[in-house]
Image (cartoon, rainbow, N blue to C red; front, top):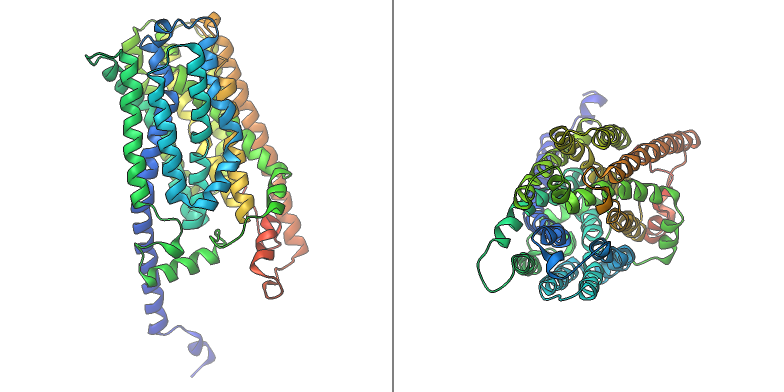
Length: 477
């Protein structure tokens, strides 16, 4: 018998491979069922809770409380002062307490504060409640991104992170019509008070379900069989997914904060979130300025959001067709830049509305794409957690700045705001191009040096501390 024949896998090997594939499919099916529906639902509601202040204004809250000048803009931005600074600490606490406890806890806290907005009687009380909301809601998005790194390989993360972010745009589809229905309820409360109370109660219900269903890590998940757990852990180890047993590392925190590429991802997320946040909050205002009534503008605000939702679903597929995140990000940012330039220059309200829809289509994919790009390239348990939080942290700055770019004095054209978002998308293009060139250069350098990782002489902690500087790591560009 030839040596070649001896090297061919026998039926037992083929059978083992098929059995392992079946176990992985079963694992992914169970994990998706336990994590994704509730994560999607809670992000959907968190975006509604964060932005329903805009719907409340359209329902007359500003007049009822006597807000004037820039006061409403400061009420919006107050949320982001704490949101910016609490994301990194929140991810550290998530690692300490586990997702099953931490994520439902912060959700209940922010939703109770949303309900408190219904009782606010002054500008000062609105500011105080929004500041506290930012403390708790800050941890949810970076927490979910970090959590998926423990459960999925990098390739498996792609459609799931895109699906997660699509919930935010999906919320925009329903926020306006839902608010319009709630503000029309008959009762002892004012219309905008019903918006806050009922939407907050929905979030509490989902958070309680999450506490009952969620599990922290594959190694401890009760819904997995031992065979599924073993196959999954081997798969995750081969992909260098994060280990729940790795300790917190101050060294990795400093590496994340001093890594310019981490801030490159964060700048892209900030610029993309600026457009997304302003559309979510000021969408009804921008549409009302085109000549529609308040209730009609609330309903029509669902159309641009639906366009954004469609493009975010598309972002689930694009990295599978062509795994070059920078290319997709540059294409979408260039399109958004052009669309906003049109909105800022034309007078016809129908054309402006059409391009508002197109701009939302171009804006929406970049947040999930850059989050996934970061998650693919950053290694190290603590560094990835900090990088995830830093990326989303600058999204909070987007909300802070975006709260002031659509100013009452610029109505009805709001040219300043549209030009600002146009410039943000130009920034996205430039930063994505810079990261593209750097990662290609760095990959070529590592290929030339042809170094290898001697895992036999290093402990798992030492390997983890190498982060994405490990010689066998190649960046996705």
